[in-house]
Image: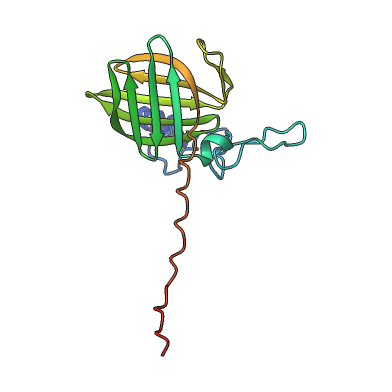
Length: 183
């Protein structure tokens, strides 16, 4: 009796052992499931990590978020910046009239930052909601300021700018009626 396998050549047998020529799809390696990305930005809704009951997390600081006008100043070297809208006026002892700089406003959870360009270099005023005390006068301010000009960063204090006083209302104009001659 002859064995049917004896008729197969050795090359064909080697191919069968390696699964060459078979049309069966190879199984994909199973990738373990990792954490899914959040459905919304963590800036919009804080990520809950479980454990204790969730507590609200502030995402903006109300004083800096609601105001668009600020004043900041620092000592040694002396400087001041007044911000109104998208314009910052930067003053130093050498330039007491000040230089106006167009700035962009960025808000973050602890404050606000105004970024512009002065002489081709970044001009940045960072205001954080942390109490500050002026190193020379001892005056207290509600904001801590940090000014970066031409790569040099100096510290100072800041506050929301006082709103300009409203002009006094003009007296109401009265219409005088001409007197009619008696007659």
